[in-house]
Amino acid sequence: MRIARIATADGPRSVLADGPDWIEIADPFAGTLRPTGPRHPAATATLLAPARPLVVLGMAHNGAPGDRDRPRQAFLKSPRTVVGPGDSIVVDDDLGQINVECELAVVIRRPCRHLTADQVPDAILGFTVGNDVTAVDQIALDEKLTQAKNGDGFTPLGPWIETDLDSSDVAMSVRINGRTVASASTRQLAWDITEQLVYLTRYLPLGPGDVVLTGAPGTFHPVKPGDLVEVALGGIGSLANPVVSRPRTG
Amino acid sequence: MRIARIATADGPRSVLADGPDWIEIADPFAGTLRPTGPRHPAATATLLAPARPLVVLGMAHNGAPGDRDRPRQAFLKSPRTVVGPGDSIVVDDDLGQINVECELAVVIRRPCRHLTADQVPDAILGFTVGNDVTAVDQIALDEKLTQAKNGDGFTPLGPWIETDLDSSDVAMSVRINGRTVASASTRQLAWDITEQLVYLTRYLPLGPGDVVLTGAPGTFHPVKPGDLVEVALGGIGSLANPVVSRPRTG
Image 1 (cartoon, chains in turn green, purple):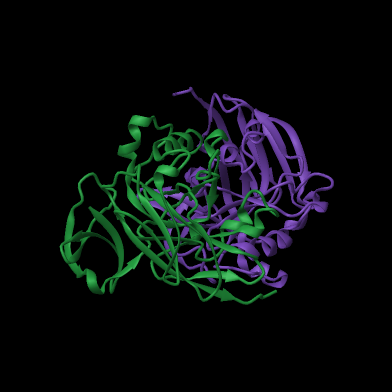
Image 2 (cartoon, one colour):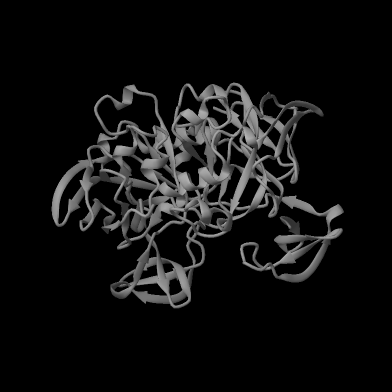
């Protein structure tokens, strides 16, 4: 099933794909998704970020050869960085080089803590495409990544959540201005989705709508203002966002 | 003025101190606070965490001699760590040593980005007491602090927000089981509140209810399950939380 959030005249609504339409649902985190009536033609609907997380986590060094020999490590991103399809990635012109990163994003379904491997599937609502935008020159200045990872629009998510997906071998790609510049598969991740969620929930609680960006196995590329970025995952879809500039202000 | 959140039969409500009562208000972030009628005797009200942040930031190394000679640095905490007065700090028994830290917590009033020093006062709703609980043995294992800072109940906030406070010289103290174990003043912070908010909003957006934990100038102390922790700030009040154990589960 596909779950999305769309803009309507009455405000944002959670919806489920049903043929050519999106149909509104009461609660995307319910065990059984209950349509509440109103339908919206998918062709003209405005998609929003499909999740509204309180917690956004990224996995550090999780896609290069040798990463499995290093301790697992994660970082928090501000949920205020989350934007949806078509929204702008805003780059301050004193941040240095900006990279985009195509990642499989896990959306959490229920409160969870100290998950065991067999509890992980029930804790996941589904998967969406995540773009973990990173001001890479800031990493050397701030190893905690606060300066590198939290600009406006630095976590595009979308276009929707796919609930039925085998996360073990998902095709990943980055296109800049229509040209494919990187491609890989989630099988290249050093630590898989289950291992990541067991690790993370050992140290912190997660809850409905929270998002884990699971790592970029080579699926990153520099961008500059004026670029159009498309990050895509097989079995889900493509997420496009423009990069725009904000002049230095202070 | 004092702004709090309390539990009522109709759910959590924002309230303003008025003599012996709390009086409900529509919007704690409005320019003018508008009472909506219902009153609750302060003596019997149940206080909740006074803010519901999307973003919780802590300032790293901001209270020891020499810290001003180091670059400013901040870390994100999960907003799911926020709890209120009387709530438990839950310690997993495999985390190692746990410290509590008494800090002045800034509560943000409005969306803000790239603040200049003169814009800072208008961006602040007020101040509350923050306890930045930290599993200090995890820091050597994970310099990003994700493992150290994000356990259940690891960010007690309260008892309320004081809107009229000179933040430059606030008395700070930590009491464990009734005994004062640390005391200091916010004048010992390496970077003051204004400098911190100018720095932080250069790199990320903040919004209503977000919280900045501004640093612990020696106001930290180890705790263990069974302890009662009270962190207090002059001109605001005291925030008490018990430390409880959760046995190893995996």
